Image 1 (cartoon, rainbow, N blue to C red):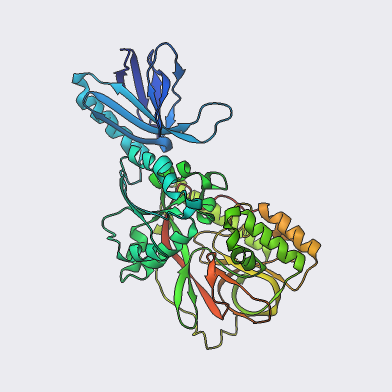
Image 2: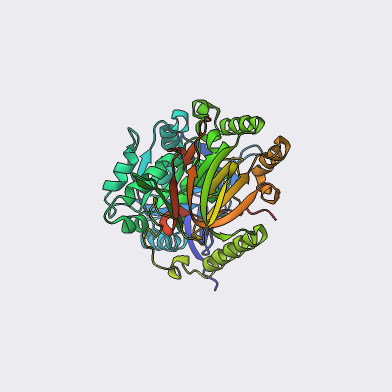
Length: 497
């Protein structure tokens, strides 16, 4: 179905005619005044028409239009456009301003109405955002990242922004627990993955936990050491870009996320990323004093453990769904195709999904697991389950992980393989090519129970990248409990051929 083009004739500051045309997919510019010369301010580039030094204004597609409005005989158009210049990449905020005649008020209002309906089709306009900033995130730059790169974009999209800085550990948990879910369209985290973990657990402590998780999706601005969820939604480059992720919050749709309950003898809480035992947990936790190194600290920790040929004894009970790597890859590709088909048909994947529930079905921790479960008793290099493909930049550890398949991806290396074989796996993990290694086991599981076996060597357990007791615990997947704003239908494609 072809949409009729809507047009509006305006003039620039030099009294030159410009015709704005909107065809349902993009705004284009025509006429002698369509050229513009960029004039910069601190946070954006304001395109003011200039007859002597023209540079053509390129069409602006729906995804990048933030807001169009008419007021006091002036038309305002805010958008994100590609940076100009061979060495410049990414997006920048652009504000276009044109002059209307006094007789054009109704026509301009209609033009703005049509454009806004098109560029926000199926989306919430002028979102009400609760923003949580971890001031310690991004090596202390999280607040600056938000104020200089993100807030101007939210303002340009006419979002309502309520900012609060976290002041202590679990502050985000308390905020989410007490949040008025009728007052906001999104809870935005400006931090690493730690604040996301806290916010989700805060929602899950509420009496209306399911409603809160469904009604208020998360929005993610990367401003921490680890930004795994952001990377998985946009890729390793855009997933670290505050501008791209701000646009994702404005133009993204809620994507369902599985969550996992983590049960110890004395407590239960929830995770959204990973559950980690062995050398990979060591690399994450024992190197915390080296956070100033960024992603390189985990690389250093892993190399140290591999060279030492470290192993960690354990007993794991697994509710296994699939162990065949080729079948797992095929299921991954089928799931991506199904998500794309749902999007192209303009139907919500949630419409066909079963209603979300928060039931705990595993046996008590002090009772046996079902006989149908697989038991692994062995020394391992690592035992690592994840709901996300990337755990960090350059660490595509679980390339077949999906956001809402109701399953965990388990990466397991048993015994004590040679240093060469382990380094080979480590060298291939950047692109997810380690999956085909003979020493790598890769399973899809619904649940598991893990008992670390204590030795003289200190063992580490990491849940969502944070310290957890090296004691018996179990994990159960809860499908589609949470929502996150995402411009794609699922995570970016990560499965190797």
